[in-house]
Image (cartoon, rainbow, N blue to C red; front, side, top):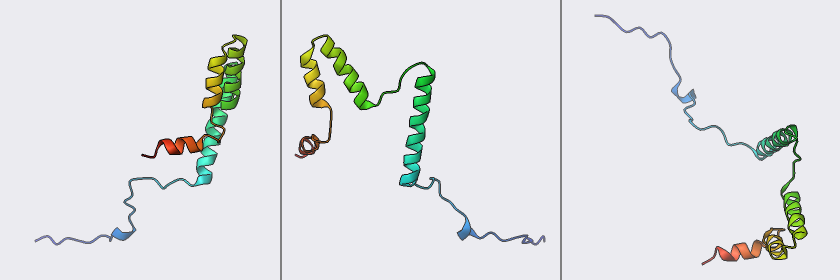
Length: 96
């Protein structure tokens, strides 16, 4: 009969069987976020536009509404924008 020949050994404990990638660190996440933002800015500016952050978009929208004398909508937008003082309202809304 044919005998099996052992050619080499595999260390099963050394094999990495993980199927998920390692969790990114906070610095890596922040770097990725900044990189995406820079790409977005470049794309918008290459198309001839101007990049506006959230506050700038809000201010521009309010200015246009004020020009039209639509003060009720302006008041709603100003009240709905979160400057950090609405945290208590949101926290209390989630409690039963």
